[in-house]
Image (cartoon, rainbow, N blue to C red):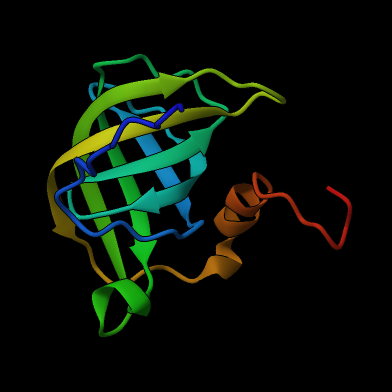
Length: 132
């Protein structure tokens, strides 16, 4: 009789499964990339991006947290952390990146998505109705 080993949950913070647009910047660089989260918590995030992100890199993520997470109004948050894991792309060009959040700050109210940046970010998402 085979038994599966018991696996203990190591996460110390509640994880939220939200696919949110995220702005990515490696420490010491002015270059900005985009991606989208798979899930996030107060201590970490996992996101997908087309940008090459090295393991152990210091990184800055900016995301608009929805009201379901903040329990008030949506808020733009900048997180600084360290890349702890990079998952190579299995299909397509998107890699998965796990980040341990070390600090975060609340930013002024989120800008309107009509400025074109949202279209750039949302282009990374698959759109089942359009076949993308």
